[in-house]
Length: 200
Image (cartoon, rainbow, N blue to C red; front, top):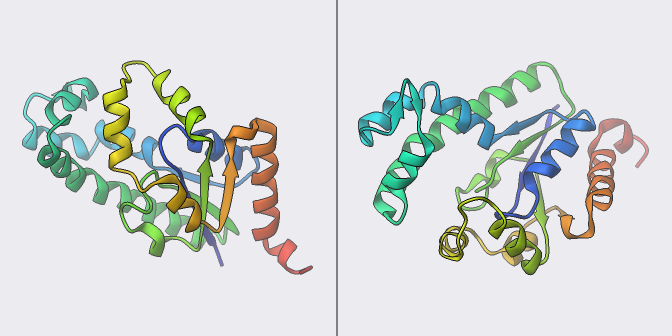
C-alpha cells in the first residue's frame, strides 16, 4: 500500500525546498511546477498556442509572453488553468500509479493549489509548509520581477495560510530554519513509514 502525502503551502513559504528534503531522504516527489515546465515544451504547447496565439516559440511556451496574455485578466487566467490543470493531474496520476505498482511505501505530491483545486481527495495526508507573514513577504518580494501588486494578486487567489494550517495533518514551519524543517520532514517520514507503524 502506497501512502500519498500532499505537500502544499502559499507562495514563499518554502514548499519547493521542503519537497527537495523529502527527495533527499528517499521519498519520491511529484513536483507540479516541474510537470508544468515539461508540459510547456510538450503536450500543453499546441493547446496554449491555439488559445493564446504568439505565446509559443519554437515549440516551447514563452512564459513572459504568456504572462502578458493572462496577467490582470481573470477570464484568460481561468482559460489557461483549464488547459494546464488536467494535464498536470494526469501526469501526477501516472506517477502515483507507477509507485503503487512498485509498492513504494510513501510518495509526495507537491500541489501548490491543493486546497484551491479541491485536491484533498487525491491524497491520504496533507503537509502544509508555513512561515511568518513578514518572512513570506520578504522572500516573495526578493524574487525577480515581483511587485507588491503581483504578490497581492497571487495571495488573493490562495486559501489563507491560517486556513491551510487548520486543515493540515502536519505543519512544517520553514521560518525556524533549514535544520528544523529537515528534522520535521524526518519525523513525518518516520511516522508514516510501515516499519515505524509496526512498533506503534
